[in-house]
Image 1: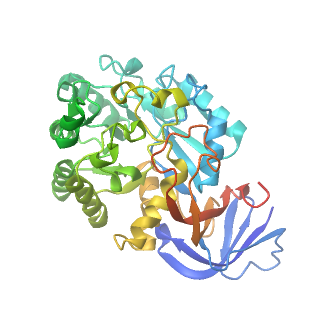
Image 2: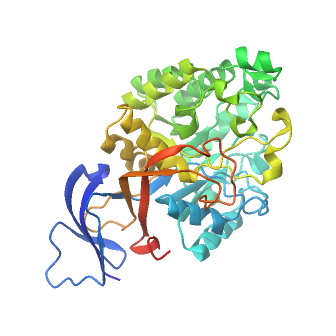
Length: 425
């Protein structure tokens, strides 16, 4: 179908476009920006006056729970939630069940996401077999199968020698390594930031140096091996400063932060609110402000959802026994837009953190110039709405943001020129 999107504010950071104009789509690609091509007749027109038109959002971390935990969520349910949230590309970590350490699993995830048809799902392959931190996975085969990077997810690679060999292998395949920096011996089964709140509540703590010490080790190995590396879901100001120094020194490193880390702190745990049990844990206000500053200056390149849907029972246990994670796809854009309202980022900068910057990290296109794939998000930046369990599309309703009022809501999502969310959906 030929589609014309008329009168919207087109913001395309990848191509440095920010103006009110029209966008014309045919055969799944952008065919014109501004005036339509000669003889172009749209089969559908979208009135985008007063709305923002931007590339489809790219989320660098979303656990979809399939295969292995379909009782929590499925690829179909979560990609439908992604479409509702304006997200067209999701990166799935390898800690599925079974682990994504073979091409067959990569093919399975791609097939099921294609069947659902709501969003593009890309896989991270396992860094080590079964994520056990011992034997290297077949990274060459995983890359050939379509993996955009490799990771050991939240499973530790305690052996520095194994991590060095893994980085060397990844570098030889030109695969980025996605790192969750946490020293397992310092984390030691903790569930909250080690500080005044954890002491008051009697919760086992995870100190911020569990992250910064792990970052220090990985930076030394990155310098040694030359691998491209991406630090996932930073939580501490100290780690952000270390990565800023490494970037200044020319190391090929990037970083992202989960949207909730930019708004919540350890104080939000209150009296054992398990909805605020996340990993890495919510830290201090100083850490939160440090992460915001790192995002504003470009040290942190992308904002991700760190989407982890859970069944109801997973959050009903006592805080240390509850499962960490937030159902976060549908709050990714509105939380990021709140940073614009708070004057931390301009609107084009905020959209870049959700589109061109994460896409560049995984080597994917993200732009709306002529000839590019027509992944499009249209949202009303002035629409106020309240997050409630009834409005969530995700199968997981575990979020501390229930009852929050947000500004900015997606009205249409197009995946390769096909409407996957809109008024008729």
